[in-house]
Image (cartoon, rainbow, N blue to C red):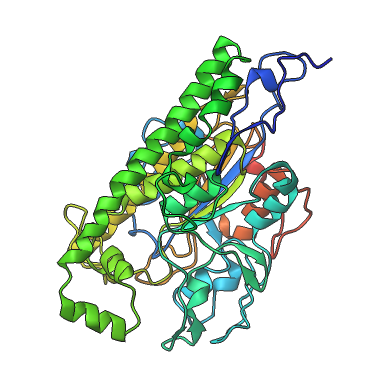
Length: 460
C-alpha cells in the first residue's frame, strides 16, 4: 500500500517559470525499499561524434582482450579501463564509394543508410537514426524524448567541391530519414529548456522569472518536499540541487567570454556581415577560443538530464564535418582541425592532430567519470548507461571510412561486457553495433540497416 510519505517517480519541483525533475529517491519506491534494487533504474544512452578522424597509429591499444594498455590518444581514460569497450574493424558500408570525404561519413553515422546526393532540401539520411528509435521507446516516460546538442550550428548552403548540402555535415540525429533533429549549441539555452517553463525576452523587469535562479523559483516547493524525506533522500536531493546551482554559476561566468568580440576590428566585422558570417561563429571557430568549458557545461547538462530521468537519450557533436575549428588554445597546436587532419605524414602536423584527439578524450573522460560518480539504483549512473564515441573517419588524411575509431563506456544496466579491446572481422558493419546497442536498450530488433547480426562478443 502507498504510504503518506511515498512520492511519485514523476514528482517535480515547481515554481513560477521553472520545473525541476528529481533524481530517483527512496521515497519514490512504492514498496518502501531501498532504491538499490536491480532493474529499478532506467537505462540511458549517449552518442558523441567527432569530425576528421584520429592520428594514425595512436588510437588502438597494442594488446587485445581484457588485458590491454591504453594507447597515447586514450590515456585520459586511464583508471576506468574496466568500464570501456574499444572496438576495431567496424565500417559504415554506405559511406564508401561516394567520392566525398566528409558529409557522407557524418549524416549516416547513426543510420548506416545510403544518403541521397543533393544540393537542395530533399535530404535523406537513409533511415531513422538509432538514437531516435530508442527515444521513441522511452518518450512516454521522460520529459524530453532526446537531447540533441553540439558546438557548431547547423550549416546551410552547398559544398561545391563535392556537390552535397552542408546540412549532411551538421546532423547525426534523424527523426525520420528526411527530417534531421534540431541541434542546440548554446549551454544557456540547453539549461533553460531543461528547467524553465517561461519564454525568454517576455519581460525585462527584475522580478521576471527569467531573471532569477531556477532554484530560487522552486525554493518553496523544495523546502516543503524536504520535510517529507528521510535523511538519505534529503542528502541526495541536496547534492542534486547543488549541481544545478553550480552549473548556473558557471553559465553566468561564461557570459564574460563574449567580451572577446570587442577585439574584432570594425573592418573585419563589415566583411563578416557582407559574407553573411555571424560574429560569434567567427570568434568561436576562427579565433581559436577555448571551448573546453562550453563542452563540459553541455556534458554536465546531459548528466543532470540522465540523473533526473528528464531524458534517457542524447547526442553530441564535437564539430560539424570539415570542421575548421582553430585549436590554438591547446598548447602545441597552431592550426585548425581540418587542415591538420590532412597531415600528409608530416610529423609536426601529426603531433598537433594527436593533441586535438587527446583533447577529445579528455572531454570524454570528464563525462564518463561524471556519470561514474553519481549513485543510481544498484550502482552508478554510468552502470545504467551506454556512452559511445565515434568518428566517421579513421585517418582524416585518407578520408578512410574503414576501421572507424569507436569507444564505448558503461554496461547499460549490465547488458554489455565492458573492459575489452576487441578486433572484429575486417569490414564488420557498423550497423551490427547499432543493432546490438538498440537491443541492449530494449528495442528487440532483428535487423538495422545493413546489419548482418549482433556483436555477441560484447553482450552479456
